[in-house]
Image (cartoon, rainbow, N blue to C red; front, side):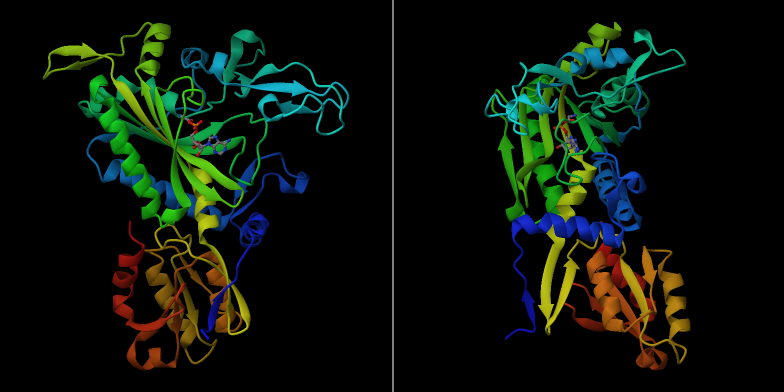
Length: 442
Ligand code: GAP
């Protein structure tokens, strides 16, 4: 019998285990926790912030650095209120709600299958539209003329800057604009940990194309985006497509496909790929009075481009990474929790351990640690037995642990222990940067 046995975890147990690991190891915890938390807002701790940064860096690099046809932008969260009238969000970004006349609780109308309150059995009101945008006031006077909104998607910051970016970058259609940033939605039923929250981060790219080429680019971006999840190590069998029916389409889209992930709480959307047609640019042209058309020098004609949008959630991707990576095993009668994160997105790439706290080992280990941390996020640990230190790193998803032992002092080699297989090899100290670099680079 093998020394390592996988432990089957029931889907309904996984979320509790993930939330507890996230808190225990400093990935994610409730916002303002000492005050009892604030509904569906989350703070990322030392490991979570590295995970999120790696996800964003990987996306940014794949969208901008590795291509010549996409430029970056970082627009303000607060925008002119007319933006949200033009985009259709003031009128259409709503959910129908019902109130219980007795206990006053509020529910999403489309999630109610009967007309009595699920909490107290009381009578429900007729549905009313509830806008999901957060409102605030700009300046010292809190009246209607000072209302501004916290952006519910980053996309609009790209549309209004279409020509500001296109001009200086001298891009020609087809080309794209990418942005990563916070978005805010006053969700009626947030939940499932960081899956649906009220403050979250999006990674959005808007690709401007000739109207007659919309279908070609929609299909192209579907392929690119699915591949991106495979590249960060997500299992293929946990991913699938959902094509929106006419009834499901958002108000701005002619066609929409969602990338879905098999979460412990069911198949859910993690990214939307949308054909937004010329809807947004036409609307902004109408509301701003500015010409947002593009002049093609080759065809000597002016037109409003169509937009193919790829819209992903950073937090949702982080949850996918954690859920996909979480494993429990029994190794020689001992339980091990291991996060099999792809080395590219793992928060800590390398842990450095002296085998024991004597014989000059900590000095050599610290020297290696200081050399490596210039290149990768590293962690130094000399406390407890080395087996315990390995387990702590398994739980944090650290792909490589280096152990400095008595042989190191003789031949300048260290043990490299790989997280998933637990196999150990020996590498020469001067080769470490190159060997690890090959495994964690994206
Ligand atoms: N610009 C188009 C747009 O925003 P969306 O389908 O509403 O489209 C895109 O959102 C992605 O943003 C979702 O697939 C999800 O990853 C993320 N997202 C949306 N609402 C979210 C929420 N309340 N909490 C966390 N992530 C969210």
